[in-house]
Image 1 (cartoon, one colour):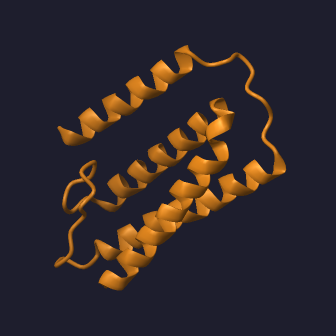
Image 2: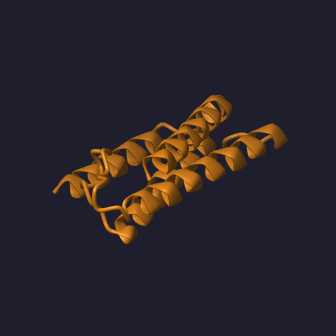
Length: 119
């Protein structure tokens, strides 16, 4: 039930964001593309470390969007959907590209380090 609620909230957020968008957002700069690459690396590091951490039955996930012991496919789906959503939002809101991609990418690396230390 929690997963369905999260997916519905995400869809509503994306649809409402699209309703107020400019028809043609400005192109990405080289720096913004590098920030997107940094974000993707951080997000993927967090995904892999989360999946690895959950192999230990004594540990559990604390993310409220996932259950305490999500399957590998649920972890993959969650990180794929959230990563894609962040990149889409960044595309249509150019003023948020650099700060959000750097911030969320950094958080991904921090969480990957945290998950690695739990093993």
